[in-house]
Image 1 (tube, rainbow, N blue to C red):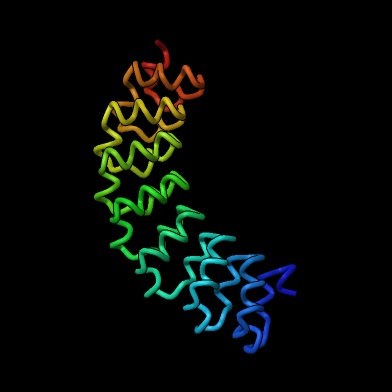
Image 2 (cartoon, rainbow, N blue to C red):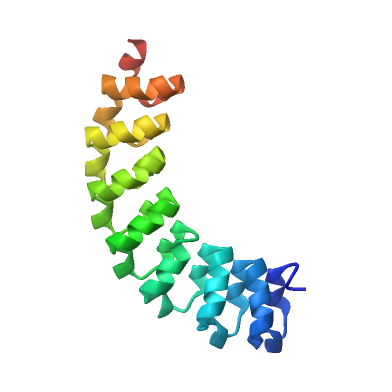
Length: 194
């Protein structure tokens, strides 16, 4: 049954939840089935890696000690950058791990430590992939004209997340409107009339 629906592991007796072959089949079909594995199999790296390969967000169900293990964190974020949300704080402040998470999924910036949300290089890496990642940047970078210009150049909707004074900057508005005229909705009425 778990080969067709990994989540069926939830309804299995304790025996199958302890059976590595059954759990492997379940997590290969649905990584989230990891949450129903026996405690001992939650510590099995092969089981964890199989779950992460199917769904990096299954990292949420890894034991907290393993959420502190850099190698395990890296394995999860390589499949879904948002798994950074469940990593130990020290790893959310690890520049290399955060860059790896952002490369996989730019909105992983949301889960980076505040110090890295203020890091221009990290933020630029995220917004080059998706301008909307600007929403997760620290306020001082949302007020940085060059950062906002890069974000708006990637996605006009990023103008919404710029500091208020930059939403009325004619050059930034023009850059956004060149991509999509509806970007005007994020600017002051006076600028819309111009």
